[in-house]
Amino acid sequence: MISGVRRIGAYSLSVLAATGRACILLIQMLGSIPSSVRRYELFVEQLFRVGVLTLPIIIVAALFVGMVLALQGYNTLVDFGAESSLGLLVALSLTRELGPVLAGLLFAGRAGAALTAEIGLMKATEQLAGMEMMAVDPVRRVLLPRFLAGMISVPILAALFTAVGILGGYLLGVNVLGVDQGVYWSVMQEGVDFQQDVLNGLLKSLVFGVLISLLAVFMGYDARPTPAGVGTATTLTVVLSSLLVLAMDFSLTSMMF
Amino acid sequence: MKRQLIEITVGLFVVTGLVALLFLSFRVSNLNSDSVSDPYQVNARFDNIGSLKVRAPVTMAGVRIGRVKEIRLDSSSYQAQVIMDISGDYNKLPVDSSASINTQGLLGEQFVSLEPGGQQKYLKEGDRIRLTQSAVVLENLIGQLLFKGNSNNP
Image (cartoon, rainbow over all chains, first blue to last red; front, side, top):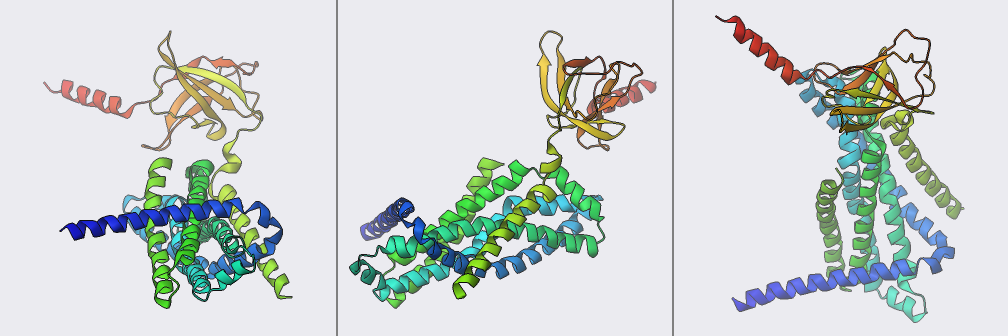
């Protein structure tokens, strides 16, 4: 009985301590931004690996999500004779929720896991310790460019996801289901507000970007330096960042809209 | 060479992101048609504005010429005071124009509709439209209808 309670306590304390270490790492990274501006090519390289290479999966997923939305929305709306509002339905669901959230989830799976595994393996093979021996700060040299690249990629990917999804909905709604193309756009423009919907959606994705990148970088840096430890850290990155994205999405939505 | 390739693709990545944002702002949302160009303000008092909202369109002959800027209650006459931004392109509206609040479709959003008058003098900044017609409140209409239907019965 007591040992069970004690185990819960120990677990809570370790979670709390890890959160604290993650926050310290975030402050360290933000503090070392000014001194790493001249090594911006490290950042560009990471932007390529984290952002550009995630692009194909984002575009293909967005196309399908947009088409499914159009199909399902059309089937429901046609019962009420409101199929002309299809454009609005697709655009609002994508800009407000699906764009940021799905881009975040896909990014966590595609890029977050890779970042954790890479940094975790660097730690396990003592490359990070080696850098410290040579007076190279691994936080500045390895973690910061990856964190910044992830933070910037997610809003860009979310904007692309939303845009491609709307085009996918257009493709199916107008060409296959027969919604008038002018109506598709005009209903959308009437109903979607730039500040309220588009900017809030981007703000959401920026929050997700910071969250996922910090988690991925921290999990790798904090992993136990064994093969099993790196595996656990990679799993935890994907699981925790997916859960956090969904939970944050709920609280952000309740604040914004 | 490889370095160049990476930089080019990253540049393309960022540019496509910006293009997507532009697409979202101008094609998907109403950023371009949102502001009324070079507006002048006109106000009108209504007995009842129904569910008219700020930013609702102001139209004449069905063409949008402005937006509702502000709605407040005039505490001396207990009427609703509606302040409208009219686009400067339409600066020749007769002073005896009348305003009414209509509904788009049966259950759609409400908007202000202006009917031109016949005078040669034109509305300018700060003028008041004197002839107004309140919103038709559907619930009241149904209530009246029911009442009349009942009174017909012996």
